[in-house]
Structures are given as C-alpha cells and as structure tokens.
Image (cartoon, rainbow, N blue to C red; front, side, top):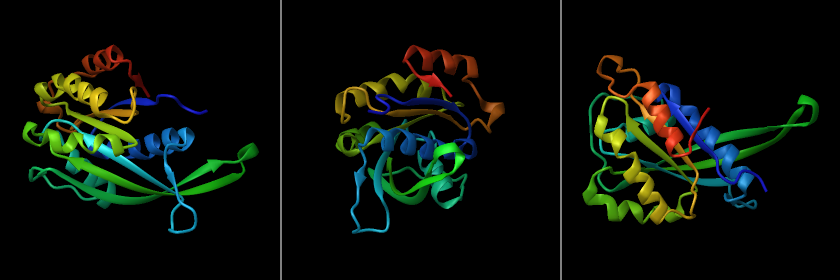
Length: 198
C-alpha cells in the first residue's frame, strides 16, 4: 500500500530546500513501510537512510550542514569519499477530524557523497542501503544540470529498486546574477524524466 513512487522537483536555495528531506522521508518512506522500525531498543521509532548525489561543488555538503546544524560556509571543501550527518525529527500524523494523531520519532542518517568520478565506485556501493535519494544540481552550473541524466542512470543501475524515490533539487537559487538554468528549462527537464513539480 501507499506511495509506489514519490518524486519531487524543487528549485531553491539551501534555505528553501531544507524541508524536502522531511517531506520526502516522512511521507514516502513511512507510507511505503521501507523504513527500519525499532522495537523499544532506541529512542526513535524509525531509522531512515538518505543519500545525497550530484556533481562536485553543487552544494550537497552545504545543504546538509544547513539542514542539520543550521550553519553555512562560503568556503568550498570537497567531500572525500563519503560522510554522513544525523538528525532527529518528529512526524505527526493528523488524526480524525483534525485531532492530533500519532507521532513518529525519526532518526535520519543523511549520507553525503563525493561528486568526483574517482569516488564513484565507492559511492555507488552505498546506493543499495539508501531508502531515498536527494539529487542536487547547481542552477549556476550548466554541466551539473546536464549530468542529471548520468546520475539517474547510476541510480537505475545501483539503487535498491527499479524506480527509487528521488528528490531533484536545483540549488544555489540565491546566486541569481550567476544563474544559467531558468525555471522553465529546469521544469522541462523534470517533466522529461517524469518528475512532478510540487
């Protein structure tokens, strides 16, 4: 039951995108039942593993730092191999007639991958354990946008299922003066790949 495939398309800066992880994980994974439920051994109800993908420099690490720590640095430090951050969130399911329903305590493991080709064999090894993917491209970098197709091909080859759950995110919209990917062009590409604008 539940959602067979939930895909979001979002254009925005780090600040505008941070809730995508909550939206994706909580609605997609809890409905699908693909999470790892815990039974009294921890202080959370579900463990969700989420993998960020995209070319080097698109802002994957910055996105996760902003989401988890509420910090942002303009300094570029390339991720070597793979890293991860953790965050706890609470998802409240609405009850009948607007009443407060059940709350689920979620432990997110947010895996940050290196975008460079030389680390590709290492990062693809983590695809099968991920329950969802955040695929970022840089709105100021044409090549990162064109490489969406390459990343989707990697997902088709290495992900846990044929149609993995993906959030596609155009990052760095705050750098309007340097932007080279228009909203219209990004939407067309999202529609071409079967993504839904939400």
